[in-house]
Image (cartoon, rainbow, N blue to C red; front, side, top):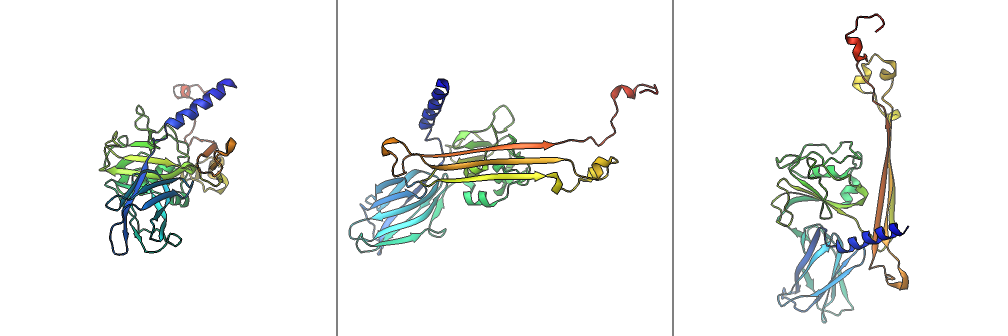
Length: 343
């Protein structure tokens, strides 16, 4: 028990020092009045809409503000200055490596008054020199993945070929076998929260299959990505995992397949064996698991407002039962050379 406690504590401390190893984005912009005159000294606050984490700054002499290194998520931007109405922009989506421009126009009034705007695609533009594609959480949730392996989401990006998004490969360490912009299928790297998840001595295979329920977004970089990524000449597939929020959320999942609902294969239909041409091969597949996330409650009300410490935990199991049947006649190898009638 003491060894287990020590190992748990060591893992927790290691996680604390590794907090910076994730892909992040940026929100920046200019604050102006209704006549397009710059406003210096305005207070700007960005709030993570999931866990209510806040960061604050003030506009400089040019009316400019910037919030670098923001975790992936949805944010609101609140701007205040005496003599103007409070400005609130909600639903600002920050993806990994994205530089999101949110300009604010403040109207004359009092701080008791506020103007709230819901961000839209036309209002918020993403500025990034990277040629890539981000698959967001809603797309991951809505798309049907055969075997629930999110590595095949890379095929949604133009320039990625090979493999198939319908591949049934739920528990494989394969990296998908893609060719990114013509590169070989071992010339790209897979990352999870900024950490390398590719086996360097195994032709690019992954360390393990990623649980799709833990994935917040997938970023596929194909060309012209910044030097900070490095390491790979053929592209990058980057997983950004979920984190807990102020509210408790959880899911239960069961992916079930049964040969009773399958059609027989062409090969089995043409077999002379009754146990093959009359039915499909026996097959049972269960993929089940759960995920849960939320705030962590600790003594002395340190986290009473649920904005300081969060958790997210997910686990998945696979149970597979099948049988492989030979389709050619079986002969014991010595019999091929024997002439005895007993053979």
